[in-house]
Image 1 (cartoon, rainbow, N blue to C red):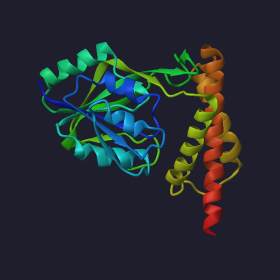
Image 2 (image 1 turned 180 degrees about the vertical axis):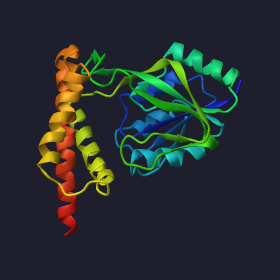
Image 3 (image 1 turned 45 degrees about the vertical axis):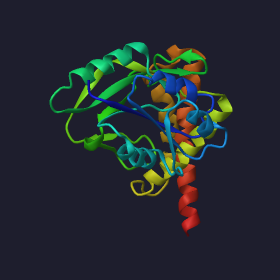
Length: 251
C-alpha cells in the first residue's frame, strides 16, 4: 500500500481537533498545520502524537500550499478540522492506495453537509465536492483568497464515499466566518469587477438568495434552507460593500 500523509490545517479548533485526528488515524503521518491558535488547539494536538507545525495564517490556499511540501509521503489526504473521514471513506481510500490507477494524481471527494444541527440535502450544497486526496508533487491550490481548488497535473478521479462536514458552531460564529469570507472575496473580485452599481448591491444579492432557496430547492430544507439562502445573499452584498470600502481607502 502507498503511504499516506494526512494534513489538517487548524486555527482555534479545540472543539474539533481530537475527533478530526482520530478520523485519519489510518494515515502513516498526521501533520497538523496550526495558525498560532490561542484556544489550546496547538497544545492539544501535540498530545495526540501527530506532528504539529505552525505558520502565521494569511489565507487558506497560501496555508495549504505551504503545508503540502512538508508532507513526508507522496499521497496526501487533506482534511479541514470541521470534516471527518467516515469508516466507509477510509476503506475506499485504502483501496485506492493499494491499487493506484496510472495517471490519476487526485480525487474528488463529496461532502455530506450539516448546518444548525440538520443535514442539508439541497440549498446548493447537495453536490458539494472537493479535491482532498492527491499526489504531493503533482498538485497545488489555485492562489486565491476564497474557495480555491486544487490544480492537478494529471488525471482526476472521483471517490464514491463522502466526507462528513459540519461547519456550524453557533450562528454568531458562522456570521463572523462569512464576514471574513466577504473581505477575502472583495480582494479576489477587485481586479475583475468594474464600477460598482446597484446591480452589485441589489440584483446580485437577491439572485444569490433566489438561486439557493428556489432554483436549488433550499425551501425543501426548511428553516435551514431559508437561513442558507439568506446568508448567501448577505455575503454577496457584504462582498461588494467591502470592495467599495477597499477602493475608497485607496483614494
